[in-house]
Image (cartoon, rainbow, N blue to C red):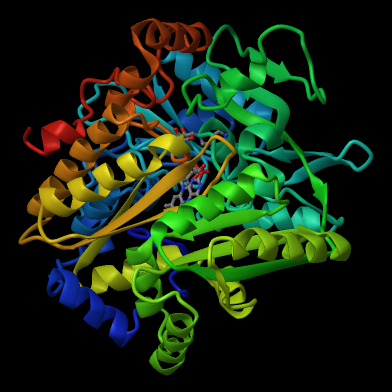
Length: 549
Ligand SMILES: Cc1cc2nc3c(=O)[nH]c(=O)nc-3n(C[C@H](O)[C@H](O)[C@H](O)COP(=O)(O)OP(=O)(O)OC[C@H]3O[C@@H](n4cnc5c(N)ncnc54)[C@H](O)[C@@H]3O)c2cc1C
């Protein structure tokens, strides 16, 4: 069963090895566990629903019970995590609807438009930017619409390689349905286990193997969006291989974050399953060589499916958290002997294709990487990474039990600006709050630049309030640094409510007005997910207010 107050399934856990805990203690001091609220106590705090009768009025399954409302009240940001663990959720939806079809969604939207009800579309609830949280203090009732029952493969055009799915399909179920027919979508965000196709599209998600399959922008071919205007209007976006027929309607949907309508059906471009896939790990002697090697690989168009470069602190942290101290000591000795000692950086690569392609790419890889002093460790570490790729979010639970919180920040910028931005982000996180362990990797590389993905861990503070305030200070000050240093406010997590205040710095006033006007065109009463994407809901506490700035 899914955890009501954290990540993933209650039956799954990831251990924090003893040496990993010792490593953290040495860097940032002992953890400080905070007490968890009990589900029964939180249930008692849920106010009566203002939406009794909506199920009968629409003929759609709607739940009003406290537990369903708790389970759909928050996403997975650190602020959400603290709200869930403390039991202080702020606001709850009044009810949660579970439509089975586009027609069900249309009935809900027509009803909500008539009765002035706020609607929050909900995929897997894995947002890390406050997307799905109801706004506190709103006088209007809130209906959260879960797409979880719209999860099947409706059509597979094998000749054109286009699959049509219900938008609420989560990663594992989507891949299982495609794999049974010999295809894959190849979209693997780290949240794969719980996040959904509809959520990926509207937040412009990026999967770990985007080098081969593309970001969701390239995979999204078309679909159907139910709108909150008129008497049940919808937008059908056709799936052409390419088109010069004016602006592309897909672009209105991508990044709309539940403000435009509810995406009910999604057409995606799929690929036949590859004959072979392998993951390899190399170590580079230092950051400059690692970064330049990554750039050389992508700019030489080496056909990789994944490329991830960890900086020296992330490399050290990964090795400390790996367990097996004897084997790691042996690896360190070997790497040192080969010239990758202190300051070394790990590069993890994916190669996917036919046997002949994989073997040709491996040759090309060795050729490019030898110029940078890379040391190959073969397939063992790469295989371990692939086995645990969706387990890392469970580490958050293990860290929490030991009194630590963890959060991530991400952006993208051009190669010329990578070090300046990366250093500014890391320096700020290290110097603004309590002792904080900070490390970074480049997870998505392009010819022009890359994403920068920074993780930071600090001990819980003396209370929930103090911990939230510390997070808000770090989040707010670093978000400001990102936009002031030429980074985008998000490469993959989207805008939500947490990043909305920083969006105008990137887009400019005229563009912000245009985005607002487009959303208003599709949702004239502004009832869809207010406060997300556009900072237009006064009840949303901004990170800077939480931080007391
Ligand atoms: C541990 C962890 C790892 C992550 N790793 C990645 C990663 O590698 N890459 C990445 O891109 N992101 C990642 N994320 C962020 C998150 O998973 C993505 O933003 C994801 O796309 C959200 O999908 P979801 O189905 O959970 O959407 P939700 O969180 O449910 O919703 C997100 C937004 O989309 C809207 N929405 C959802 N479904 C629909 C729909 N059908 N129609 C209209 N609006 C809808 C909601 O209203 C909301 O505004 C990670 C998050 C976590 C917690």
